[in-house]
Image (cartoon, rainbow, N blue to C red; front, side):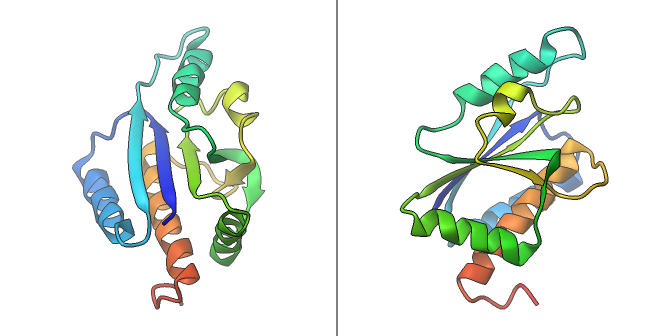
Length: 152
């Protein structure tokens, strides 16, 4: 079974976002082993992005296929993301790690570790909302792979 780790900079505070994340985490339970790691977000000061990046890098499990969410990343549709994940598993990898930066984005040190830089959209979204979106897209991608009816 695929293992997925979602590393997020910052802690969710809004109840509605926590509930949405919890729903997708529950739905993902039968499809993968998922864990969500939150690393503290730094105040916007010199060196903050690098300190966040060091904490993110420390949370990436060895042997992971790393996907960094960043606005300059590649745009993929749901089917293409599903095919990407299928390619990872076909290549014999069983662990993916998705990374969502904080309000300042992701450090170059984190982006350079990514096998895929992925953009959700050319639009900018709050990083806490992006967490819900990533969990939903992971659920959709794995549902497509499993032949489920979620994706229409």
